Amino acid sequence: MTSDNFHLKDEIKEYWSNRAQTFDLAFGHRIPPGPEFDAWQRPIRQALGDVPLSVLELASGTGEVTQLIHDLGHDVTALDFSEAMLSVARHKHANKPRLRFLLADAENTMEPDARYDAIVCRHLVWTLTQPEKAFEEWHRILKPGGRLLVFDGDWARLTLTGRIAATVIRLVDRLSGQDPYYDSAQGEKHKRIMEQIPFSNGLRPERIIPLLEHAGFDNISLQSHAPIAAAQRKQADFRNRLRTRLYRRFILTATKA
Image 1 (cartoon, rainbow, N blue to C red):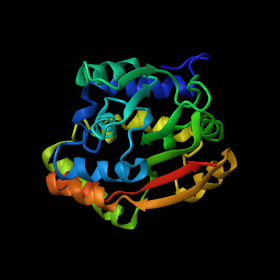
Image 2: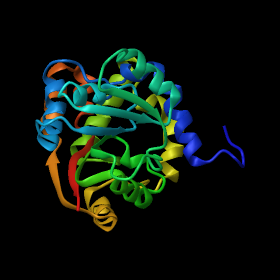
Image 3: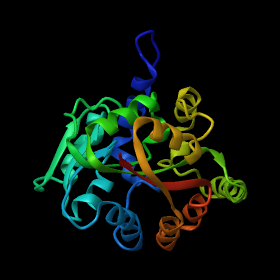
Image 4: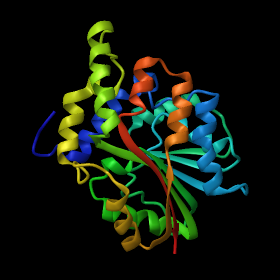
């Protein structure tokens, strides 16, 4: 879909909305109970602590990370700009206390100043159309001393091991058929978006850390994503085990100064 009034943000929204009903079938999006659930939840527990907080989850999608945060006892606002994604999440988490869903733009939330104790997002930063303004917005809506937790990766460039894994995956696809739910099945749409976003040549910590510092964040630190990938491999088939080795992923934490 293209027109003079159909902008990049609309294209991104349409892409995710079209995937909402099958998104949890794609490897790497649904977080199954067991080792993978525990591995994803561990950095959240470490970043947020044991005292219940008011947490904003940005780009909450179908509510997988929502459950990780909510199960730790926090009050969660799950924000997404796709009504289709929120519809799936609302059904998944119907009637839960301490949880509200908000249809809004993660780059311009329209939330009050100093509203939240913490912000959590998974696989959002790479899609930001105006990252500098987004980070300033997140800083604005956090309370003093508020925490930011980011799960993301460099989805534009394969690692050295990833190149080998990608070659084997292509062979598996030819032998057993392509996985219809994996991101590559949306290849052309995904590629078109990637070509237009600011992080089109890859999201790396060294690129976003100066932007976060400029927005007013400090105490920025990085953690390895390796424990999560290792947990994913325990429950994955051969092709998906290879997928955990494709890209460099990272966990970043920061504090509002």
